[in-house]
Length: 500
Image 1 (cartoon, rainbow, N blue to C red):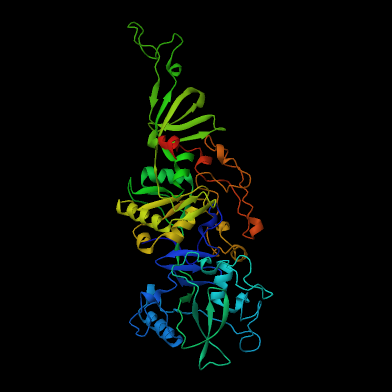
Image 2: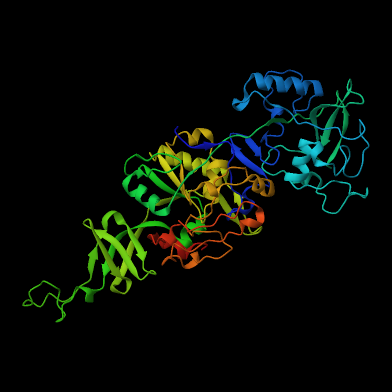
């Protein structure tokens, strides 16, 4: 597949909220990118229970000795699991005097450890936000400790058990190795013959698909013509009408209640607009009495219209000629959708946050590819989910079915996450995530008028995302979103019946 792929990609801020678990991004194919530590974990924290890679001596529940865990990792690499041969057990850094002082905070051993000393400790405490059984003064159980109900994030089969590290215990390396107890957050040394769990991790990141940014108007033209424009990221190409589709990744409720990209099927002019001074249809003879003024229907070329001049004029072409009609002369505009709704998250009313639907999104995109669509153009409210969902949730074998993947957002090198921004937010460095596109045109906070975008606001309005506080560089600029371009909107007839 000729797709634009970057090693680091993601978006977790623009209207996305809880889709990303801290700095953990579902990379698909059973792997989780840990962007803070630049690691990849297997999503199944007890993979050995179902996949031994031919190693004997692993217990049915997945537990094994330290030596057997290392043997399992070697077999995993020989099998080139998920296309990689550099899997390992997580690492521990022994700081201070060799050995363990079993402290309550700030060291390499005990509870509330120094996160720089342990990759799994950093994951458990830092990215998943769990708290230890002991507080920093040694009191227990400290308020908020969850026991077996600790946060497991996007992982499966993550239990409150001991997990082997790949690091031997320097004080007694012949019979002990470091291990982490995920029930209470304790890191310490364990006897190597103790049955514990092995969890595979590797350095680096799983590449994700970086959608190519184009404007809403370019997206409309691409859907109607089947041709994508030349961009700095990729050359243009024609795939045929019906082969390019806008994929609205917003929730079902957003899609139906806010509206979605549409085309204009009919512009119906008011009856009086077709009248002469005597009240008859213009150009008709007046002797039969059947020539009273009637509404006139216009079908614009390619179904394209734009609101211009402060949304007072509807602009379109008719038989190749540019036309402009004041809105007060139009009776109605009939629209139909040019998008398909494949939501990548569902709104959770109880938590007031999005719940990721990675499997549903990937399955929906798979069906879209099987239907013959060659190029999807993802779209959300502003440009966050339209980036993250293809990156985080789209299985590689599904992505490979498409010729290219685009999104509606503002292009430009200035709209990428800096190193400082990555450190501040957990977003991968180099991600393109302007947040000046989508359906509404900018982020939900800040200075914009997307709620009344259709009729839209002037497109030279500068969006203010407030990203400077996050050290990302504060990308600002004119919106290239759907409403702000004055393009047609379709609102479903079922909108009034949602929830009944």
